Image (cartoon, rainbow, N blue to C red; front, side, top):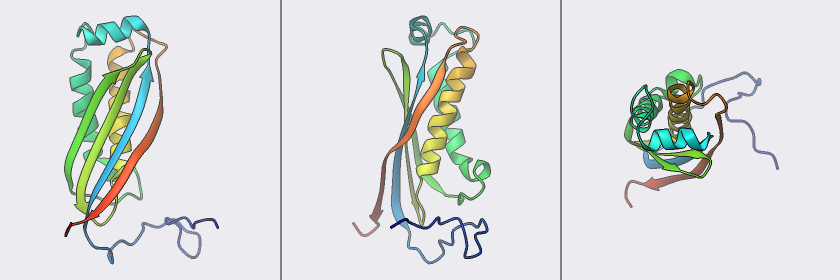
Length: 153
């Protein structure tokens, strides 16, 4: 059985989902993405030799700021009062992996915020390194985990 799209009303018009009847819960989402780049670019990032500055610190701040603005970027997202936004990076043999964890106590999930944080963090890495590496590719952006917990737990 196919699940109905929640952002369409009975007339198939786009609508924001009504969450007014839902109880607040602890919502957690983890997203991840990857940016592929040359070995030289990876090394320059590691050694903080990118002329625009500290790439990963700047990308972390950009990801956090983006998560807070998600409802302004994605038309049908609810504004959510976020309790925590974490953006972390690790190096792979082919580039940088960005992982975001977002938490809120609210009536709707935070997966869009986690995905937005990862996407903008990767875009920031791209922007800061594009003068050095014209072949970078962002991708594999996905939700790794989504949870909700009753506040009484």
